[in-house]
Length: 348
Image 1 (tube, rainbow, N blue to C red):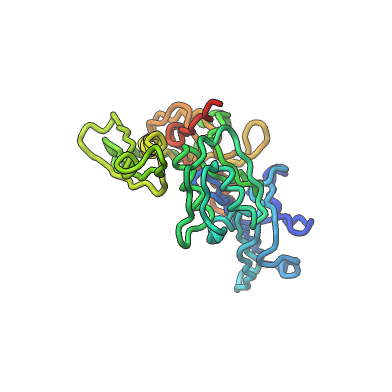
Image 2: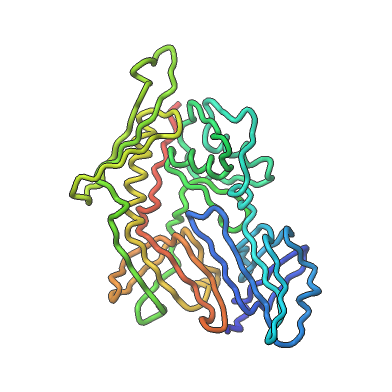
């Protein structure tokens, strides 16, 4: 097990830092609104773990090299005793987990001529979560309405799809909306240098030749009847040679431009995600001494697995145990997997 100070994971609760964990697993991802952690401390001798003033539901931070990886709450706490060991196991998630778990109960539950960020800010306000937006969020929705029993995150994600945006958490408890691809690189992941394991798969089962998104536009004095009864947007994936159409029914009242953008988003994301790569390296820190981060890119060179080029880190897991040591496992995809298609702001 690594004893490097910079690889020391701390759980901070009520200003007290707890460390010395014998097992660590922390996961963060672009397509996972809330990061997760699991920490375990086990020892053969009697430890002070049972006296730690930690309770399920407590606010907490998981820190690595001075960087918060998780800012949220403890979901569960287990204290255990066996013939060979005793200790404590703690797991939890980012604050944004409440947006994933909880229903959106805003009243009246519908908005007109409001933008994604404006509606999202109202949805998350009861949870006292901060919103950070990068770039343009596109045109306002003519009308957006919550669906019965829909979670807060599901509603936000639904809006984002029509504006080519992603909602995610960076580990600091803030909800972010924008493009998760930072364009920054963590450096090389290369065969014979720092790669422990590598795997690349290619599948076309979730890709289609033609994408058609149908919806209904809102009527007005100028536009009504057949003009708004049903509109649609289309996109193609040129790499799929045989005829494989996919029809998607739009969840919202939309115009042709936003439906086309949704169709293009489906084609781009499905194309990129059909070529997943997994790479495992030793350690948790980049050359700059900071923890690796999802949304960054890696310059990959693993010819034995057919992996090369700049790939986007979609998901990562920091882990440590007695068997595997201290490692980071990356799920990487071509950047077009999360190519965002946000609408430009309308000109004044």
